[in-house]
Length: 298
Image 1 (tube, rainbow, N blue to C red):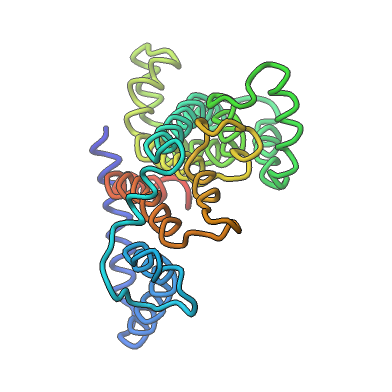
Image 2 (cartoon, one colour):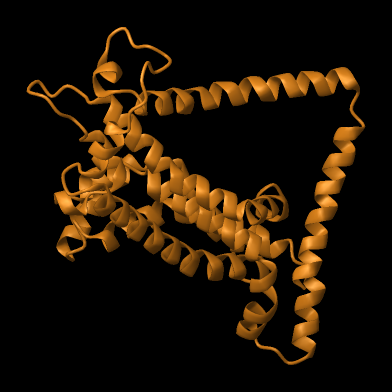
């Protein structure tokens, strides 16, 4: 059955490719030029950050700044690894919070998406709209009430509490993706399973979950990136230095008597914080693309 999903994905990709091949040559050149221009604009900050991270600290702080380094130095990276509690502590905290966020998101979004896609119930569309409604509320407005309630139950300044906040912010979009992923699976497979006497749980476990792997991976990847980059909730909920996540550490990379920013160390931290997201995306990009083709753009 996984082969059926992969064949469906390949068919959609082939359809897009053949449609693109039918475009005239000038149109393809224009599209390519736009893509190159957008890619250049988006990658330019990363390239400048990397160049600043390998400059000597004095050169990185120089004003006006130079675009290319006059000398190669890894002193800024060494400084980041030894900063306060150490970079490994902050990376471990971010990874723990992101992993808990993924577990909570998938634990709630998978059954919710399955129920909304396959079960018959009254006012199902209304329930779905209500689940998506929090997307229209600025999440900053939810943080203070959440902090007050979490403080009463001892979840403030804990990685589990912060992961729950990240999961709450990510759940509407996750449920939307999972519902579309389950709806893209042919209903005939479910009917065949019922004829064989499978229960709803057995049908979900043996048929739907293997076929919905691209959607599940897409939800997990979105949850990881959102949790990894989230700054404001971590700033509000975490108040111990050893509990900080990477975004909080990057903001606090300051030194000097006047609190001047160490640009070299800051850019080195930015480059190091990007690496886990890039690595995970490269490993899971096949499922990510399939998840979007099967569900998100349905």
